[in-house]
Image (cartoon, helix red, strand yellow):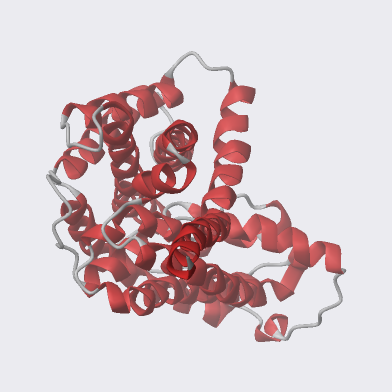
Length: 370
């Protein structure tokens, strides 16, 4: 467990933390999320990648001004104890909701595809038990598991050769016949798959080479964008417009195009193996929630039992007696608004930092003049 701001994350840890936290479960439904622009959808991941990299600039600027502080401490320094604590409560909730959102989407997917006779309760508890074990090892344990997950699942990109061979490559030619509103809708719906990179504001103090953190984070972003781009190309080539618009998990249908003599239902294999990406993504969010508990209730000092509290809350938010429309509000709408607020907050915090610095300098300048 993390007992101080010891520099423990190497460059490759940062790359895989960014990349794995972004992909999570969003890749499964990405072609459907971008369906508003039809066959032009493969352009959207590139645009989103550029926008994401652009928003990373103020994030890195803020982190480098406070290299030894996580976002929980930065908010208290810039906004004051009272407002800072209130903001940290929101950040804590975002960590819990982020972990629960990824877990909920995956257990629902597994229930409908792989284990239709099982309830989600036992699987959810098992999932968060493993996530808790990962988080107990600290941020370096989470980063190592992200690396393990990438190499265990990343090779599945070779499966795209079957839908690419069977598809019609004329579909890939962009026509740009859709309206500007449709493009904005696709960018909004697709941006959900880009969330997660902003969590670097919480583990930045643990990075060894902070000067090159922007480069390493950008590399992680573009690895994820490359996967999104290739899957979008395969979906455009293989599916009809109706299929892209109506298939909720098009990647599963891409799996069905694979023909191997020794495997009958490759989509079950792919869905099961995907659990490692889900575990790594949920673990990163849960670690953030745990650090939020430390900040709010123990003056930023480490307490191991906080992990169990946030894991329990995340589990109960999925299997607890919460009406389905409330769950949809939390996991679909609230998590999205939280992510947008987190990724854009450095702009406001940098402005406050500049104003406070200016106010501090004015009395000093007057004293020197007198």
